[in-house]
Image (tube, rainbow, N blue to C red; front, side):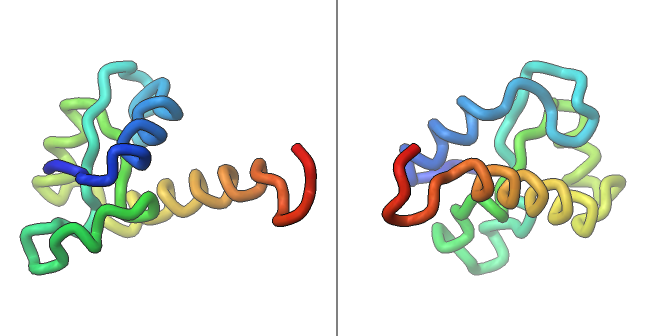
Length: 93
């Protein structure tokens, strides 16, 4: 699916050096954990609803072979790590 937020898409691609599930394949695709087609539209284009997966894991996620709870957990851990790396408001880097 397409993500209209160009900055978010660029950040996701820049930070993904491999599949976030199998951690092996460097060729990744963007996957919406909660599908946009269920009525959420572009409001689901947020980092905690996105995960970078290789072709094989992406197919497994669509087939339900990888539980959404596992994907949510991976995305949540990634976002917590990213937030912890950011300086607090008013602090220098």
